[in-house]
Length: 444
Image (cartoon, rainbow, N blue to C red; front, side, top):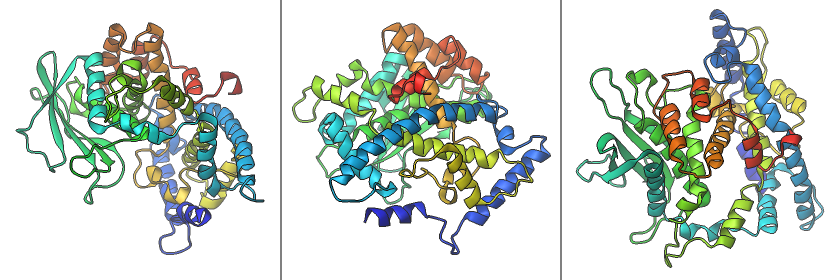
């Protein structure tokens, strides 16, 4: 059954029928390369990265390969451990469709951490309050419910966001799944901040798809769902704290490899001691036990080899497509196979996004030659949170003020590399990301 479901999932758009996407993928890549050539660039990747933080495809490729090497080695090591577990269930070889099943067994065996143990401490209302508390401590914000503003759905809640006693925006929280919503989680704006034609306050929306509990029962989140709330609220703050003149560079209107910094960075505060202290058991009111916290933090490094391999391989595939010139004559299957062969893709792991369902690349051009940016932003967020660790306080006022000025409020008003240096005091370093994933710098 695992194999049947896995094969159906990974073969989307690759079944030789009317919905086969190989020809249209090749055509899109060819047209993008032609466009880049008309604009004077050797490839579409060169064109897209010219005004990014990375600047060149070579710089993005260098980052991806630096993380690929230790990630692949960790995945190969884990594959051996998973094979030993699989062997207990019969005489068969571990396959890609078996990985997640046995990875969960391995996580329980290594870390003795069951995510269901943490859920009673992650009640939705308390996680929202914790996200607001973090913003208050960092940026001096307050959140005032605005029951007089009619939301676009009864489940949606509305707050006026204030700083230094003045309204700076309106925040809409749309947290529960419903039939009329697409899946996933995202931030958007009904209106962006600007001062070009008078003061225009932003109207910012966070959307999630948590399961709405029966009336009178609490909505309990998984750790991943709580991180998602903090992540999207980080995007929300990027829009709410914007303080620029022109709407074109307001809030999240920044280059692709900078836009995930405010959101991914904000996730770090969820697991700081002052925030965790506010996340008490929904029934007993007791804080999270230290022993459970220790297991939680140790388990963060579980399966990081797999996660790194399936993501970075897809990002390298993206760069392979968009680094080709207009005369390359792209064919989907040979290019994908050659890319995976070149990097030594482990047999037991599949691409997170194979070519024919790589929506980030081919339903629009937002992430074309830019899928690497999630990893680039992770370098920035791990290194950036290190500034607070260096200060010895997750809410250090001086560091928080620089974060506000150069990351959250500046939009696209300055060069993004300069903005990061003004906040951090130097260029970003990869060591924080490797440590976060449980890799060592020497393995890279």
